Length: 263
Image 1 (cartoon, rainbow, N blue to C red):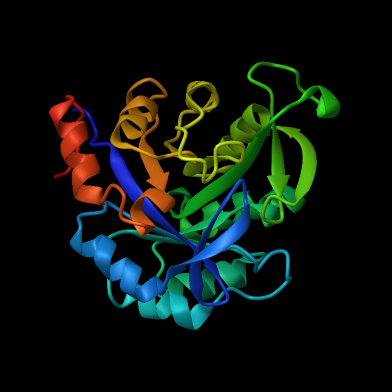
Image 2: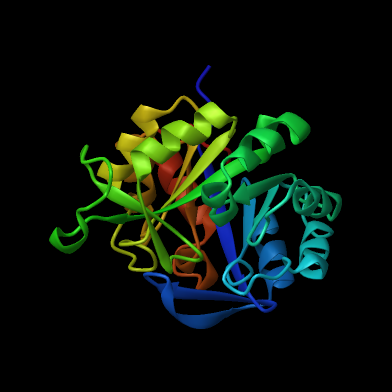
């Protein structure tokens, strides 16, 4: 049986407001997280992701009250990330209504957290977010040169790690992650389409589901990353927040083009 592909809106939250930029910078306000969450629930989103995008860089706890408020309004799987550093942090967010958590900076700094979290809460609960940026001639000193070469970044895209994204994806799977959320930093917010090559390379290198993120601008972009990139799910923000292509429009297009999708 073929599993249905998932369409996932993402709420990038900065101090209580949903924001969206281009290439992780030039943020602009996109609205209230609770109101947007209700809209996406009503529009048939398969899941919802909430990322507190400044919690890690500001070394603070995630916005727990906002998480609780969003969770109270939706009945679809809810993934929360940003600034989660310990098992207690994860436990707290799950108690506030999250179904899954994403780990990014903390996972790179302390990979054992992935393994410990998977053992305590189950692999199905642990999503590792990988923010990847394609290598340029100026920064090719990354440990693995296998194509397509993309470097892992942390702290909201502010800090390069020197790790190859494919190598890191393989490692997080071994450590017990149940899913990978891959964001192309080069495509983020551009609406020029997902990085199909990088997505497929990650999908082909692991046996766990991969969520593709970064670059959605029109229905054909979703079809391409799900069909050619073979992603299990497509995540997007700008294209949904600013209503250029609502979730039902995307889903109908995918259905008409032969994708197994929940309408």
